[in-house]
Image (cartoon, rainbow, N blue to C red; front, side):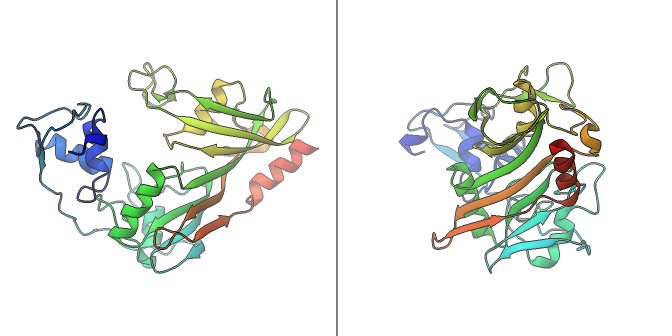
Length: 293
C-alpha cells in the first residue's frame, strides 16, 4: 500500500485500483471475503495505515447479458473512446429492481459502451435521477472507464445543472457543504439526518431572480444520490416540481425542474478540452416561461 493511502477507507482505496474498477466492485470483493489486510479480513470502513499489505482477487469481468433496445436517444458528442448522451426525463440510467428493460444502458448498447466492474452498467461513470434530464458521459472501453473515473474522483469532470427553485437565495453565489445519506427514519429519502452520512458539496450561482422563483446554475463537486434536491431543500429553496423534497406540481410541472446542462472535462486520452451543452427541454422551458409571467 502506498504511504499516501494512509487513513483512507479500504473500500475507497480498492475501488480506485485499475484491477478493481469501482467502489461497488470493491464492496463485492469485501463481502465475499476476498480481501485480506495484513493477513486478516477487514470491514469496508477500515482505515488503512502505512505499510499494511493488501491481498485480493481481481474480479472477473462478466460479459453483459443485456439486450440492446431501440430508444430515441440523442448523442451530443462522441469519439472512439467515449460518448456524451442527452438523457430524456423519465428514463432510468441502468437496470435495477423494477427496471429490467427500457433503461439508458439498454439504449446505449448499440453504441458500443463498455467498461466498469458491473455487467449491468457497462460504461456508466455517473448517473442522473430518472426524472432529471441532460448530459452524461459514457465509456466505450475498460481503459476509458478507468480514466473517466479518475477525472471524476479528481473533480476535473465539471457537471453543471439548471434548476428552478421556489424562493430567492440569500446571495448570488453560494456553497453548500453538508454530508447526506439515507434518512434515519425513512429509507426512501436522503437527508442530512443520516446514520451513514457521506461528504457532499454543491455550488450555486443565481442566473435569474423572478417574482416567486429563482433560476440557478448548480455545480457538483460530489455526486451523491439526490444531492442537489436535498441540499436545496435544506436551505429553503425547494426545487419546483420535485415530489419528494420540493414542490410537487409547481408551475404545472410533472417532474423536478432539474437539467444537466453542461459537461466539461479534459479528454482522458490527450487532455484536449471537451465541453458539451444541452438546452432546456420543452417542458422545463414552458415552466420557466410561466414563472417569468
